[in-house]
Image 1 (cartoon, each protein chain N blue to C red):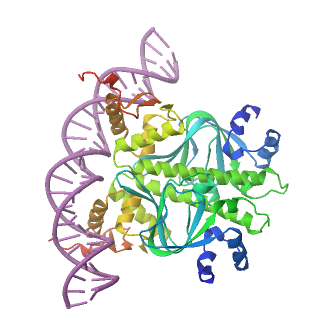
Image 2: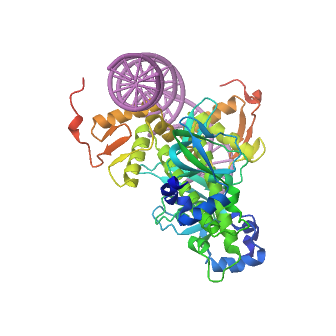
Image 3: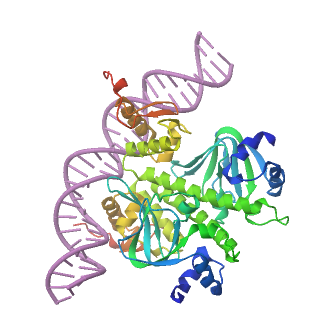
Amino acid sequence: MEKYQSVLSHCPLFAGIQAEEWQSMLGCLDAKILPISKGEPVFLEGDPARLVGVVLSGGVQVVQDDYYGNRSVLSILQPGDSFGEAFSCAGLNKLPVSVYAVKDGEVLLLDCRRILTLCSHACRFHSLLIQNLLQRLAQKNLSFTQKVRYMSQKTTKDKLMTYLLDQAKQQQSPEFVIPCDRQTLADYLGVERSAMSAELGKLKRAGWLETKGSWFRLHPSGPVNRQNEEPI
Amino acid sequence: MEKYQSVLSHCPLFAGIQAEEWQSMLGCLDAKILPISKGEPVFLEGDPARLVGVVLSGGVQVVQDDYYGNRSVLSILQPGDSFGEAFSCAGLNKLPVSVYAVKDGEVLLLDCRRILTLCSHACRFHSLLIQNLLQRLAQKNLSFTQKVRYMSQKTTKDKLMTYLLDQAKQQQSPEFVIPCDRQTLADYLGVERSAMSAELGKLKRAGWLETKGSWFRLHPSGPVNRQNEEPI
DNA sequence: TCTCCTGTGTTGGAATTCCAACAGAAATCT
DNA sequence: AGATTTCTGTTGGAATTCCAACACAGGAGA
């Protein structure tokens, strides 16, 4: 369990919990560790909505798939992030979304009712956990507000640029790495991957940004025409 | 204050609070009543994100406007609904959204910090309020999940039908009333009003639904060709 | 009753997206 | 290293949306 201390200590859900309390806390919450492997589901739509997950290593994404197989990515989660709180706290029986691993790793599974219900030991961390949970739910609302802002833009280019500018602001640098590949980004923004790729190509050629894989550098003050050479 | 008892008693944020506690609770929370009039802002983007609002009468909508004046409706709120919790609980300084009245009425304004911080009187209702707040934040997450699902549909028709089917399910009847006009619905679903109207017309003519103003009746089992008369 | 105003439906051309298909680059596996 | 698979960018025609403009209905108010 010690190998996860650095992750857990930076996890917003456990903020303020002392190192020596973890052992008893995780026991009290009936925490389980689940290995996850790339591409495999962690939760599937329709599963009971009782568990809360915390990404320990690797990465997961929360998705909604429709009849036609179109995938909508709701959130992209990295180590320290938690998922599923909203559904269990709202008292849903079944999950309306699925969660898939996008990278091998491990998640911590907790029973949400053990967080909300004070246990017989009246553990000190319960009220702290509830405060953190509240904070985390508010934070998730903000994430959705942002996502909706991206999706509300009219064109693919506007959705993309609104997202990238937000990323630059969040990471406090015009140079940054996004947490996903092109397909996932497209599914998150609600656009066609190929159309998005085309827009990226245009923006690149026009000198507004550079990108390679998940790395980006924006030139928000204006195009740098370094790459603007003769088109073939 | 008595005239709002029926609203307050059904407000999820105040669930479980006894009638005789309201007076002292509202005092302790430093609650204020604000009259609102149709079309006027309640909060504006950039305002301090400290207050939580509860709709007492009338209605409000939470919106994001962009540079070009395109409006995105985040949520449509009716008496008993609360707004702004997420931003204050997440500790934002400034509101990233605006709130407008869509109908004359009144809202109750509370200081969120007074809910989260236990007061010196150790009022009984504090822990209850925090529980309710948590529940409400989780519920809002669900609302966003639904909204994203509508917006993720490919076509205007799919967005519209996904929304209407959800409404029918929520109101447990194929016949229901939506809480807004066409323009607001379009801004909520992220589509053009005129395109949406056109789709509504097609669906009506094909016998999939009937509608008049905010009233709808779905025929999910298949078209009823009552109205399918000779096109002019 | 008449007028004004708001809300809704309709239309047509311009702009954008969707979709399928393909090619090259990059990563992974053996 | 070589083979295989995944990821990314590109392209072109079909489908859809966007936008502005207009017509009409119904309600509010004079």
